[in-house]
Length: 407
Image 1 (spheres, rainbow, N blue to C red):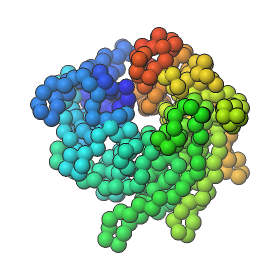
Image 2: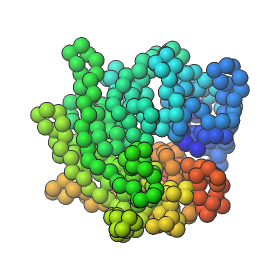
Image 3: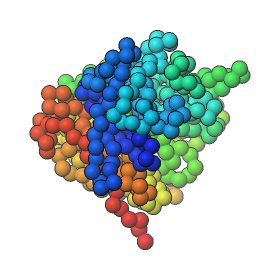
Image 4: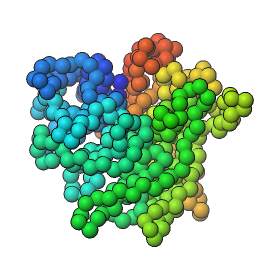
């Protein structure tokens, strides 16, 4: 299950939660009494048939926004989008294929929305292992074909959940893809030319786990934000695909005359690993895969904090052999030193043997605080562990933010 987002699908002014997978797509609506109602969306496929079950045309990618301007959030799922039936969550959600005219875009892993070309409208940025990083201009009438623009080469994951922002201070939105970033550069004719810059190496996989050349080694979550408050956008990243993960931030040290940026890496958490006689040897706690990242002011101190969830599926649970329970962590941003470094304090915010995958964060309770919604990648038999707190069953959990700003 993936395709997660927080958006107001029924027009009541409150955030709803959506998730999708092999069982179809669902929206969870929070009721006045604090309970939640789940809606199994009535998807109408391109042939006009009811198709409520089965994964949409995607791998893990999905997001939500009001595409047609009617005030209700629509769903984007891989190479298609589904029109919200006017806020009626039990109505028919018509499918449209936005990418067919430009060669299709199935099995997308990462999808994010950002105004890439500066026209004041959201564009869709996508990435898939077998194709590339690209963005689509969304027309005023989204039922018409979307214009595709290629950006650069892909890996398995790396631009989600928020790998975009102005990195070199030129006012244009750049794109981060785990170990590189793509500079948004205008040609004289007004079209965009993308220049790829190296960020630095990511993790090396344990022997016998997954093959490096499949792109898994550089699978990471990325989020652009100003971590140390110096006015320059930094990059927060977390290893996303296998145990032994780390979470770190890349400090933006300033822009060179040629438009490139100098970076300095700061590892926040995660053990180091070396290879001895073909075996992995770990130093420190072996974190699970961190396919779940949010950045924002969770503690109310005006600084950007970091939240990660360890994963629940077999190859990615924490511990040298996956024997530990997955936990969720908040890294509280306490202070910035004179040299631009940041002091973080680690808080374990959930330790109930339920991991997280593609978490989303937002003010669900309507009190101005950032809350968190998490779910696993799959269920027992679908890449999930059968030793989680629910015996491998699927779940959606909400972490309500109860923090109070320090006096």
